[in-house]
Image (cartoon, rainbow, N blue to C red; front, top):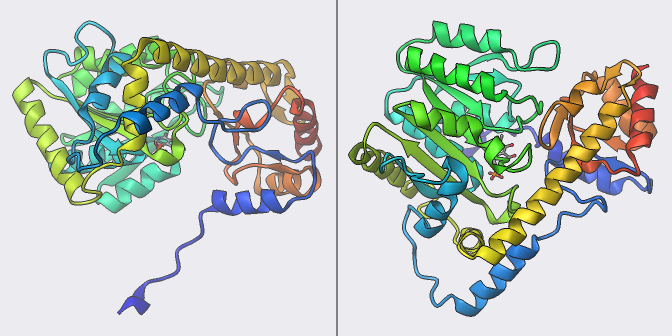
Length: 392
Ligand SMILES: Cc1ncc(COP(=O)(O)O)c(C=O)c1O
Protein backbone atom coordinates (compact mmCIF):
# COMPACT_ATOMS: atom_id res chain seq x y z
CA UNK A 1 0.00 0.00 0.00
CA UNK A 2 2.75 2.44 0.87
CA UNK A 3 4.18 2.06 -2.62
CA UNK A 4 1.42 4.46 -3.73
CA UNK A 5 3.32 7.27 -2.02
CA UNK A 6 5.28 9.36 -4.46
CA UNK A 7 8.58 11.03 -3.71
CA UNK A 8 7.95 14.67 -2.72
CA UNK A 9 10.31 17.39 -3.97
CA UNK A 10 13.09 18.27 -1.52
CA UNK A 11 12.80 21.62 0.26
CA UNK A 12 14.78 23.94 -2.02
CA UNK A 13 16.00 26.18 0.83
CA UNK A 14 17.35 23.21 2.81
CA UNK A 15 19.20 22.03 -0.31
CA UNK A 16 20.64 25.55 -0.63
CA UNK A 17 22.04 25.35 2.95
CA UNK A 18 23.96 22.21 1.99
CA UNK A 19 25.36 23.84 -1.15
CA UNK A 20 26.40 26.92 0.86
CA UNK A 21 28.15 24.81 3.50
CA UNK A 22 30.08 22.91 0.83
CA UNK A 23 31.28 26.13 -0.89
CA UNK A 24 34.95 26.73 0.11
CA UNK A 25 34.99 30.46 -0.78
CA UNK A 26 35.62 32.52 2.36
CA UNK A 27 33.70 35.56 1.06
CA UNK A 28 30.51 33.61 0.19
CA UNK A 29 27.22 35.25 1.23
CA UNK A 30 24.14 33.35 2.45
CA UNK A 31 20.93 35.27 1.75
CA UNK A 32 18.78 32.13 1.55
CA UNK A 33 17.76 30.89 4.98
CA UNK A 34 15.21 33.09 6.75
CA UNK A 35 16.78 33.51 10.18
CA UNK A 36 18.18 36.71 11.68
CA UNK A 37 21.97 37.08 11.61
CA UNK A 38 24.24 39.48 13.44
CA UNK A 39 26.94 41.41 11.56
CA UNK A 40 29.18 38.40 12.34
CA UNK A 41 26.77 35.99 10.70
CA UNK A 42 25.60 34.43 13.98
CA UNK A 43 22.06 33.66 15.19
CA UNK A 44 22.70 33.83 18.94
CA UNK A 45 20.34 32.99 21.78
CA UNK A 46 19.04 36.28 23.28
CA UNK A 47 20.67 37.05 26.65
CA UNK A 48 17.18 37.67 28.09
CA UNK A 49 16.15 34.17 26.96
CA UNK A 50 19.36 32.62 28.36
CA UNK A 51 18.61 34.25 31.73
CA UNK A 52 15.00 33.03 31.65
CA UNK A 53 16.13 29.53 30.70
CA UNK A 54 18.56 29.43 33.63
CA UNK A 55 15.73 30.40 35.98
CA UNK A 56 13.47 27.86 34.38
CA UNK A 57 15.94 25.05 34.98
CA UNK A 58 16.33 26.15 38.61
CA UNK A 59 12.65 26.76 39.35
CA UNK A 60 10.57 24.37 37.25
CA UNK A 61 9.16 21.67 39.48
CA UNK A 62 7.28 19.47 37.06
CA UNK A 63 7.13 18.41 33.46
CA UNK A 64 3.55 17.16 33.81
CA UNK A 65 1.14 17.73 30.90
CA UNK A 66 -0.08 21.28 30.28
CA UNK A 67 -3.19 20.74 28.15
CA UNK A 68 -3.92 21.57 24.50
CA UNK A 69 -4.16 25.29 25.28
CA UNK A 70 -0.51 25.31 26.43
CA UNK A 71 0.91 27.87 28.85
CA UNK A 72 -1.84 30.44 29.34
CA UNK A 73 0.52 32.65 31.35
CA UNK A 74 2.56 32.96 28.15
CA UNK A 75 -0.55 33.50 26.00
CA UNK A 76 -1.79 36.32 28.25
CA UNK A 77 1.64 37.93 28.81
CA UNK A 78 1.93 38.45 25.04
CA UNK A 79 -1.48 40.07 24.63
CA UNK A 80 -0.64 43.67 25.66
CA UNK A 81 2.30 43.60 23.24
CA UNK A 82 0.11 42.43 20.36
CA UNK A 83 -3.23 44.12 21.09
CA UNK A 84 -2.05 47.13 23.11
CA UNK A 85 -2.39 48.06 26.75
CA UNK A 86 -5.63 48.97 28.49
CA UNK A 87 -7.81 45.95 27.94
CA UNK A 88 -5.96 43.74 25.44
CA UNK A 89 -8.77 41.15 25.60
CA UNK A 90 -11.34 43.74 24.45
CA UNK A 91 -13.84 42.77 27.13
CA UNK A 92 -13.04 39.06 26.90
CA UNK A 93 -13.69 39.03 23.14
CA UNK A 94 -10.06 38.02 22.45
CA UNK A 95 -8.60 34.83 23.86
CA UNK A 96 -5.74 32.66 22.75
CA UNK A 97 -3.86 29.40 23.01
CA UNK A 98 -0.23 28.40 22.64
CA UNK A 99 0.80 26.72 19.39
CA UNK A 100 3.97 25.06 18.05
CA UNK A 101 5.38 28.15 16.29
CA UNK A 102 3.55 30.56 14.04
CA UNK A 103 3.06 27.64 11.67
CA UNK A 104 0.89 25.85 14.23
CA UNK A 105 -1.05 29.07 14.76
CA UNK A 106 -1.69 29.51 11.01
CA UNK A 107 -2.79 25.89 10.89
CA UNK A 108 -5.30 26.40 13.73
CA UNK A 109 -6.56 29.64 12.17
CA UNK A 110 -7.19 28.04 8.78
CA UNK A 111 -8.70 24.85 10.24
CA UNK A 112 -10.96 26.86 12.57
CA UNK A 113 -12.07 29.11 9.72
CA UNK A 114 -12.94 25.99 7.74
CA UNK A 115 -14.90 24.53 10.66
CA UNK A 116 -16.80 27.85 10.82
CA UNK A 117 -17.81 27.49 7.17
CA UNK A 118 -15.02 29.28 5.28
CA UNK A 119 -14.41 27.60 1.95
CA UNK A 120 -12.13 30.13 0.22
CA UNK A 121 -9.23 32.15 1.52
CA UNK A 122 -7.95 35.11 -0.51
CA UNK A 123 -4.23 35.67 -0.23
CA UNK A 124 -1.81 38.20 -1.70
CA UNK A 125 0.90 36.54 -3.77
CA UNK A 126 3.74 35.90 -3.56
CA UNK A 127 3.48 34.79 0.04
CA UNK A 128 5.33 32.59 2.50
CA UNK A 129 5.23 29.25 0.58
CA UNK A 130 3.87 27.35 3.59
CA UNK A 131 0.64 29.40 3.50
CA UNK A 132 -0.42 27.72 0.25
CA UNK A 133 0.66 24.31 1.59
CA UNK A 134 -1.38 24.73 4.78
CA UNK A 135 -4.44 25.84 2.81
CA UNK A 136 -4.11 22.89 0.42
CA UNK A 137 -3.60 20.42 3.26
CA UNK A 138 -6.57 21.82 5.18
CA UNK A 139 -8.81 21.58 2.11
CA UNK A 140 -9.57 25.29 1.76
CA UNK A 141 -9.47 26.86 -1.68
CA UNK A 142 -6.78 29.51 -2.10
CA UNK A 143 -7.63 32.50 -4.30
CA UNK A 144 -4.56 34.62 -5.05
CA UNK A 145 -4.39 38.34 -5.74
CA UNK A 146 -1.34 40.46 -6.47
CA UNK A 147 0.33 41.76 -3.30
CA UNK A 148 2.87 44.13 -4.82
CA UNK A 149 2.36 46.87 -7.39
CA UNK A 150 4.96 47.68 -10.06
CA UNK A 151 6.32 50.64 -8.05
CA UNK A 152 7.27 48.41 -5.10
CA UNK A 153 4.32 49.40 -2.89
CA UNK A 154 1.28 47.29 -1.99
CA UNK A 155 -1.23 46.62 -4.78
CA UNK A 156 -4.23 48.18 -3.01
CA UNK A 157 -6.32 48.08 -6.18
CA UNK A 158 -6.00 44.28 -6.34
CA UNK A 159 -7.00 43.98 -2.67
CA UNK A 160 -9.96 46.35 -3.12
CA UNK A 161 -11.22 44.38 -6.11
CA UNK A 162 -10.74 41.09 -4.26
CA UNK A 163 -12.69 42.22 -1.22
CA UNK A 164 -15.49 43.80 -3.26
CA UNK A 165 -15.92 40.61 -5.27
CA UNK A 166 -15.66 38.29 -2.26
CA UNK A 167 -18.55 35.96 -1.49
CA UNK A 168 -20.18 35.12 1.83
CA UNK A 169 -17.99 32.62 3.65
CA UNK A 170 -14.73 34.04 2.29
CA UNK A 171 -11.70 34.95 4.40
CA UNK A 172 -8.56 36.91 3.59
CA UNK A 173 -5.07 36.12 4.87
CA UNK A 174 -3.00 39.24 5.60
CA UNK A 175 0.60 39.58 6.79
CA UNK A 176 0.57 41.77 9.92
CA UNK A 177 4.01 43.28 9.15
CA UNK A 178 7.36 42.56 7.49
CA UNK A 179 5.77 40.77 4.53
CA UNK A 180 7.52 37.54 3.63
CA UNK A 181 8.88 37.43 0.92
CA UNK A 182 8.51 41.00 -0.36
CA UNK A 183 9.06 43.29 2.67
CA UNK A 184 6.20 45.39 1.26
CA UNK A 185 3.82 46.34 4.07
CA UNK A 186 0.52 48.22 4.24
CA UNK A 187 0.83 51.77 5.59
CA UNK A 188 -1.37 52.78 8.57
CA UNK A 189 -3.69 54.64 6.17
CA UNK A 190 -3.98 51.53 3.99
CA UNK A 191 -4.75 49.40 7.07
CA UNK A 192 -7.52 51.85 7.97
CA UNK A 193 -8.95 51.47 4.48
CA UNK A 194 -8.66 47.65 4.68
CA UNK A 195 -10.56 47.61 7.99
CA UNK A 196 -13.30 49.71 6.36
CA UNK A 197 -13.49 47.28 3.42
CA UNK A 198 -13.68 44.30 5.78
CA UNK A 199 -16.45 46.04 7.75
CA UNK A 200 -18.35 46.63 4.53
CA UNK A 201 -17.90 43.18 3.00
CA UNK A 202 -17.95 40.92 6.09
CA UNK A 203 -14.87 39.01 4.85
CA UNK A 204 -13.14 37.29 7.79
CA UNK A 205 -9.54 38.47 8.31
CA UNK A 206 -6.81 36.02 9.27
CA UNK A 207 -3.70 37.97 10.28
CA UNK A 208 -0.29 36.30 10.28
CA UNK A 209 1.95 38.36 12.59
CA UNK A 210 5.27 36.53 12.53
CA UNK A 211 7.82 39.37 12.73
CA UNK A 212 6.50 41.93 15.23
CA UNK A 213 9.30 44.29 16.25
CA UNK A 214 11.51 43.60 13.24
CA UNK A 215 9.94 46.27 11.03
CA UNK A 216 9.40 49.73 12.51
CA UNK A 217 8.75 48.96 16.20
CA UNK A 218 6.55 46.74 18.40
CA UNK A 219 3.61 49.18 18.39
CA UNK A 220 3.98 50.28 14.77
CA UNK A 221 4.20 46.68 13.53
CA UNK A 222 0.93 45.87 15.33
CA UNK A 223 -0.94 48.83 13.80
CA UNK A 224 -2.99 46.73 11.38
CA UNK A 225 -3.80 43.99 13.89
CA UNK A 226 -4.90 46.56 16.49
CA UNK A 227 -6.99 48.48 13.95
CA UNK A 228 -8.76 45.24 12.93
CA UNK A 229 -9.59 44.11 16.45
CA UNK A 230 -10.70 47.62 17.47
CA UNK A 231 -13.32 47.87 14.74
CA UNK A 232 -14.30 44.43 13.49
CA UNK A 233 -16.57 41.84 15.10
CA UNK A 234 -14.37 38.87 14.23
CA UNK A 235 -10.74 38.11 13.38
CA UNK A 236 -8.23 35.28 13.72
CA UNK A 237 -4.61 36.06 14.54
CA UNK A 238 -1.58 33.77 14.17
CA UNK A 239 1.53 34.88 16.06
CA UNK A 240 5.14 33.71 16.11
CA UNK A 241 7.72 34.36 18.85
CA UNK A 242 10.33 32.40 16.93
CA UNK A 243 11.83 35.44 15.22
CA UNK A 244 11.37 38.28 17.72
CA UNK A 245 12.64 36.12 20.61
CA UNK A 246 15.11 34.12 18.45
CA UNK A 247 13.50 30.83 19.48
CA UNK A 248 13.17 29.22 16.05
CA UNK A 249 13.81 25.60 17.01
CA UNK A 250 11.83 25.82 20.24
CA UNK A 251 8.64 26.38 18.20
CA UNK A 252 6.90 29.20 20.09
CA UNK A 253 3.66 30.64 18.77
CA UNK A 254 0.16 31.63 19.74
CA UNK A 255 -3.26 31.73 18.11
CA UNK A 256 -5.90 34.30 19.09
CA UNK A 257 -9.58 34.59 18.15
CA UNK A 258 -11.71 37.75 18.31
CA UNK A 259 -15.45 37.12 18.19
CA UNK A 260 -18.64 39.08 18.94
CA UNK A 261 -18.71 38.27 22.66
CA UNK A 262 -16.78 36.50 25.39
CA UNK A 263 -19.01 33.40 25.35
CA UNK A 264 -18.55 32.98 21.59
CA UNK A 265 -14.77 33.41 22.01
CA UNK A 266 -14.74 30.62 24.61
CA UNK A 267 -16.64 28.40 22.17
CA UNK A 268 -14.24 29.28 19.33
CA UNK A 269 -11.20 28.44 21.47
CA UNK A 270 -12.72 25.10 22.48
CA UNK A 271 -12.61 24.26 18.76
CA UNK A 272 -8.95 25.34 18.70
CA UNK A 273 -8.21 23.01 21.60
CA UNK A 274 -9.97 20.12 19.83
CA UNK A 275 -7.97 20.79 16.63
CA UNK A 276 -4.72 20.86 18.60
CA UNK A 277 -5.61 17.68 20.50
CA UNK A 278 -6.11 15.85 17.21
CA UNK A 279 -2.75 16.96 15.77
CA UNK A 280 0.07 17.80 18.24
CA UNK A 281 -2.10 17.27 21.34
CA UNK A 282 -0.15 19.84 23.40
CA UNK A 283 2.50 22.36 22.41
CA UNK A 284 6.12 22.12 23.62
CA UNK A 285 6.61 23.97 26.90
CA UNK A 286 10.20 25.18 27.11
CA UNK A 287 10.35 28.19 24.75
CA UNK A 288 6.94 29.55 25.74
CA UNK A 289 7.88 29.30 29.44
CA UNK A 290 11.05 31.29 28.71
CA UNK A 291 9.03 33.97 26.88
CA UNK A 292 6.56 34.12 29.78
CA UNK A 293 9.45 34.64 32.20
CA UNK A 294 10.90 37.42 30.04
CA UNK A 295 7.55 39.19 29.71
CA UNK A 296 6.63 38.96 33.39
CA UNK A 297 9.95 40.34 34.65
CA UNK A 298 10.52 44.05 34.01
CA UNK A 299 14.32 43.77 33.85
CA UNK A 300 14.24 40.84 31.42
CA UNK A 301 11.58 42.59 29.33
CA UNK A 302 13.84 45.65 29.07
CA UNK A 303 16.78 43.43 28.00
CA UNK A 304 14.62 41.75 25.38
CA UNK A 305 13.35 45.08 24.01
CA UNK A 306 16.97 46.29 23.74
CA UNK A 307 18.04 43.12 21.90
CA UNK A 308 15.08 43.31 19.52
CA UNK A 309 15.79 46.99 18.91
CA UNK A 310 19.38 46.26 17.96
CA UNK A 311 18.25 43.56 15.51
CA UNK A 312 15.76 45.93 13.91
CA UNK A 313 18.32 48.74 13.74
CA UNK A 314 20.80 46.48 11.96
CA UNK A 315 18.17 45.44 9.41
CA UNK A 316 17.23 49.09 8.84
CA UNK A 317 20.90 50.07 8.39
CA UNK A 318 21.48 47.36 5.80
CA UNK A 319 18.32 48.42 3.96
CA UNK A 320 19.42 52.07 4.02
CA UNK A 321 22.86 51.20 2.65
CA UNK A 322 21.37 49.09 -0.15
CA UNK A 323 18.92 51.87 -1.05
CA UNK A 324 21.74 54.43 -1.02
CA UNK A 325 23.53 52.37 -3.69
CA UNK A 326 20.62 53.36 -5.97
CA UNK A 327 20.81 50.49 -8.43
CA UNK A 328 22.89 47.47 -9.31
CA UNK A 329 22.80 46.78 -13.04
CA UNK A 330 19.13 46.48 -13.90
CA UNK A 331 18.02 46.08 -10.26
CA UNK A 332 16.52 49.17 -8.60
CA UNK A 333 17.59 49.03 -4.95
CA UNK A 334 15.82 52.23 -3.83
CA UNK A 335 12.49 50.51 -2.87
CA UNK A 336 14.37 48.29 -0.38
CA UNK A 337 14.83 51.36 1.81
CA UNK A 338 11.03 51.81 2.05
CA UNK A 339 10.31 48.14 2.76
CA UNK A 340 10.35 46.42 6.14
CA UNK A 341 11.67 43.37 7.90
CA UNK A 342 14.12 40.69 6.93
CA UNK A 343 13.05 39.99 3.36
CA UNK A 344 13.03 41.53 -0.08
CA UNK A 345 12.36 40.18 -3.56
CA UNK A 346 14.80 40.99 -6.33
CA UNK A 347 13.60 40.83 -9.94
CA UNK A 348 16.14 38.22 -11.06
CA UNK A 349 15.64 35.26 -13.35
CA UNK A 350 16.84 31.71 -12.70
CA UNK A 351 20.02 32.16 -14.77
CA UNK A 352 20.97 35.32 -12.90
CA UNK A 353 20.38 33.62 -9.53
CA UNK A 354 22.49 30.65 -10.66
CA UNK A 355 25.28 33.00 -11.87
CA UNK A 356 25.27 34.84 -8.53
CA UNK A 357 25.89 31.51 -6.83
CA UNK A 358 28.41 30.03 -9.27
CA UNK A 359 30.43 33.16 -10.10
CA UNK A 360 30.13 35.23 -6.92
CA UNK A 361 29.28 32.85 -4.04
CA UNK A 362 25.99 34.68 -3.38
CA UNK A 363 23.24 32.24 -2.32
CA UNK A 364 19.53 33.15 -2.47
CA UNK A 365 16.17 31.43 -2.90
CA UNK A 366 15.12 30.55 -6.45
CA UNK A 367 12.26 33.06 -6.15
CA UNK A 368 14.73 35.96 -5.84
CA UNK A 369 13.97 36.43 -2.15
CA UNK A 370 16.90 37.66 -0.10
CA UNK A 371 17.37 37.68 3.67
CA UNK A 372 18.54 41.22 4.39
CA UNK A 373 20.15 40.00 7.65
CA UNK A 374 22.59 37.90 5.61
CA UNK A 375 24.28 41.15 4.53
CA UNK A 376 26.74 43.22 6.58
CA UNK A 377 28.29 46.64 6.16
CA UNK A 378 31.38 44.69 5.05
CA UNK A 379 29.85 42.62 2.25
CA UNK A 380 27.15 44.89 0.79
CA UNK A 381 29.53 46.39 -1.77
CA UNK A 382 30.53 42.94 -2.97
CA UNK A 383 26.84 41.95 -3.17
CA UNK A 384 25.88 45.08 -5.13
CA UNK A 385 28.82 44.50 -7.50
CA UNK A 386 27.76 40.88 -8.05
CA UNK A 387 24.16 41.96 -8.72
CA UNK A 388 25.38 44.52 -11.26
CA UNK A 389 27.58 41.88 -12.94
CA UNK A 390 24.73 39.39 -13.44
CA UNK A 391 21.92 41.84 -14.26
CA UNK A 392 23.70 44.71 -16.05
C1 LIG B 1 4.94 34.85 7.16
C2 LIG B 1 5.29 33.76 8.11
N1 LIG B 1 4.34 33.25 8.89
C3 LIG B 1 4.60 32.26 9.76
C4 LIG B 1 5.86 31.73 9.87
C5 LIG B 1 6.05 30.59 10.84
O1 LIG B 1 6.99 30.77 11.78
P1 LIG B 1 7.39 29.67 12.84
O2 LIG B 1 8.81 29.36 12.58
O3 LIG B 1 7.14 30.32 14.16
O4 LIG B 1 6.51 28.49 12.63
C6 LIG B 1 6.89 32.21 9.06
C7 LIG B 1 8.23 31.62 9.13
O5 LIG B 1 9.06 31.73 8.30
C8 LIG B 1 6.61 33.26 8.17
O6 LIG B 1 7.54 33.78 7.38
